[in-house]
Image (cartoon, rainbow, N blue to C red):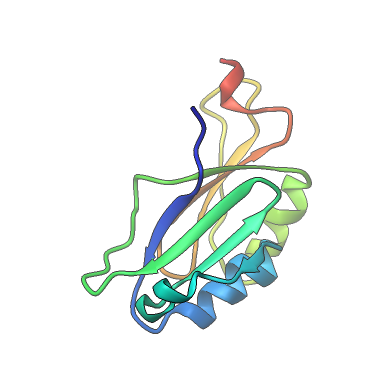
Length: 123
């Protein structure tokens, strides 16, 4: 079993902010949504085998506890870029030998970033 993609909710009209965050800041490639799904709004992104779909939810509430965790190279540089762009960065040292931080997308959805080679899957 493997995860095909993670879906995060955004409010209506949030596509431009999603593109700026997931595309520009995180460096994900935007994928073209299938034609039959385009009318629903939202956007799809990919970085390597990691796929994130952001979908419009008319009753949007940010996910403050549930979250995806991304394994990244250059965690310190990403932390600096997030901070420079005005996003809160919270380092977490609760688990020994796991370098990670939490932040949020522009909509308040919680995101975890783990330094490559320091993931939780080895625990």
